[in-house]
Each structure stands twice: as structure tokens, then as C-alpha cells.
Image 1: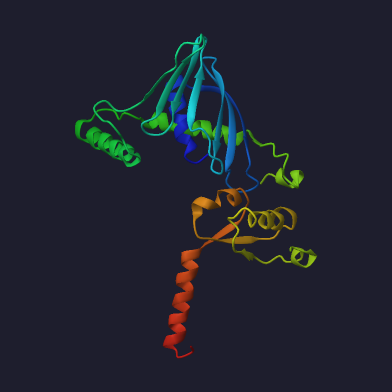
Image 2: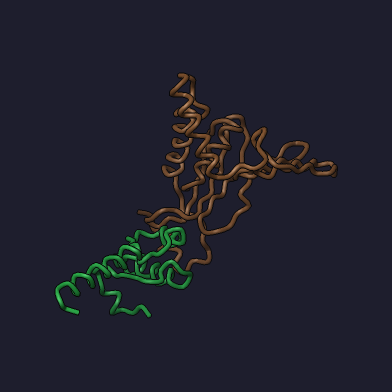
Length: 165
Length: 81
């Protein structure tokens, strides 16, 4: 799952806690390089999360609603696209911090450290709390607890690839 | 080629080139079919994701290179080379 934990964190921050999960990955005794989650959230929303270390994926979240779809990139300065169902012109733009034209990946770490330092100075709560971290780690552990082998019909020895540790 | 002779090996097997597309396949066979203990020489860990799904060990190439250089230095110091 690796860096994918941040995407799960983002999803839960946007959409709320999860109710249940079906999880598959390609580990055969090592660390998974590809995995997929079928997530159902407490508010009834369901969806699929696909994470990969070996394939170039779209790196975005697509939220389908009754009247259109909203796509949001998961990296810094993400592409945001709203596509209405009724054939209206899609709206496209970039998500950015107010007052900044472009953020960089290291900026995200600098902001985290600044937020932590400010919390120490002022005693206020951090922007991302330990409860948030524990919640997403709980999801990762729930995934590993119900792990199933991902279907790999191209593997020469399917039986051996399904060997679990 | 990996044959039955290799299948009888049970000691650790060091594989070079294992993070490539072709090199990954013998590692799969060694680990999953022949139950060998495998160590893979890795230069770039970012490219080792595919074989990381298997229970293999790793040797960082730069560690091995430094180790070999160190051994050569000792050998020279001892007038062996």
C-alpha cells in the first residue's frame, strides 16, 4: 500500500469513515506491489481504490454523483474537473493553496512541520490529528486482515502465486 | 536455465539483474516452485517493487561494491595483489 495510505487518508477526510472493505493484493510472502480495495463507507457511498507500484495509474479520484462526475488529482496542484451528465461543458482547473501559484512536493512536508511547530508554540490542535492517522492505519490493518490474492490469470503457476505466507 | 540440479539447491542463491522484467521470472521460479532462499542484488530499490512481492532478501549493490573495494584495499595493504 505504501504511499497509497495518503490517498486512503484523503478519501476518508473527504467522504467519512468506512463501513466494510474487500481487499486483494499480489503479495506472495513479500510486500504487495499492486492492490485493490472495494470500500463501502458509513454514509452508503461505495467505490474501488486501486494502488500500484508497478503500473502508471491515473493518480486521481473520480466521484460519480447523480448529476455529474468530479475528478480530483491526488498529487500537489491537482487537476480538478467537473463533468456534468447533461452534456454541459466540463469545468477544469487546478487545486492550489490560496495565494500560491504552484506548490511542490517538498512544500507539503514544510507545511506539515510548520503546522507542528505552530501547535507546539500556541497549544492549538494540529491540522491533521493523531486520530486521523489512527483511523487510516486502522483501515490498512483491516485490509491486511481480510487479504485475498489478486486474480492474475497470466501467471504461469496460479496455484503457487496464490500461496499465502 | 533453472534445472533440477538447481532445484536441489537449498542454500541462499544470489541473483543479479533480478529487478528487470526477465530477471524477475527466474526469481519467481526459484522461490515459489523450488523453495530456494534467494537474495537479489539491487542497485535501485524503486525498481524492486515487482520482486518485493516475493519473500526474498536484498543486497544493495553499492554496499557490495564498497565491500569489494574494501577487500581489495586490504589485499593491497597485505601485498596480496
